Image (cartoon, rainbow, N blue to C red; front, side, top):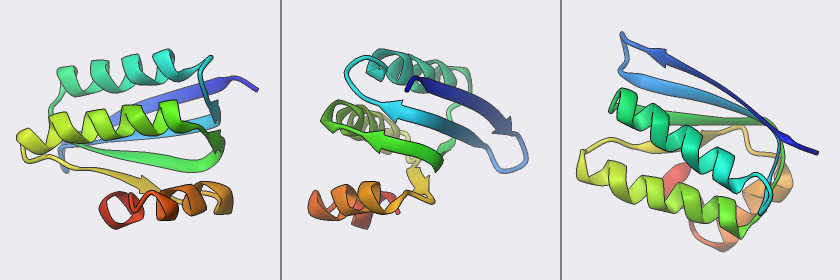
Length: 102
């Protein structure tokens, strides 16, 4: 399954909402990285990743989120994940990222 990304910026809250559908893995991670980088360069605000329709994310995708988090932290912005499926929530819990991103 491929990755579909829909981004929108809320000027009132200075926040990106990025809806992800499909899977983030080695074949789609560059598209995911480029989408986050482009959005953050355009408007340096918080980022909310909506995982409602994301079925899978591997370590490369987690790495992109961690890298983005590091860049944003320097600007005092945050990244968070909403509505991860059970398998993704388990991965976030195992890596202790649930304490930072949920």
